[in-house]
Image (cartoon, rainbow, N blue to C red; front, side, top):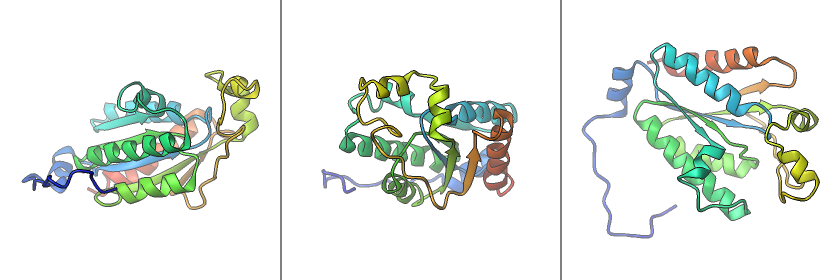
Length: 203
């Protein structure tokens, strides 16, 4: 997306991404978690963040609901707003990763197009890893931690992903975590090992 204003100029920073990565002892990258509501994205993300923090690694989690309280408080859930929501998040994640920070995002991001756009934005300067948190709709609906599926079934919530709005499964995710067939500890360990292999041991 081109900026509306043409009277702007990018500054050249003297401290590079590589300089910051060397300082932190890690590689800045984005781990884009996608999956149905209730699949376990946020639970996995915050636990992995905690473990890596205890190992002196700098990690941040960008969670869908949390972001809508601030940065994206002006956006609803129309198709246009959902696209803009994910575009903004991708830009923010890119900024963090450019500073050597490991970023874990937790967004449904239901369409292939939205995930492709996020990859295009972030891959300009940092590594992008698509993490599919796979869980059957019946299991997600059974869990229903926020009561959203119940509201969607009664028509209180419209265009809810998995009920009356589609979720397009990733076809080439870098990592698949199947939370309906493995416990939370195993799911956390899978993501933890993958991040260590791709962002920590490679510095």
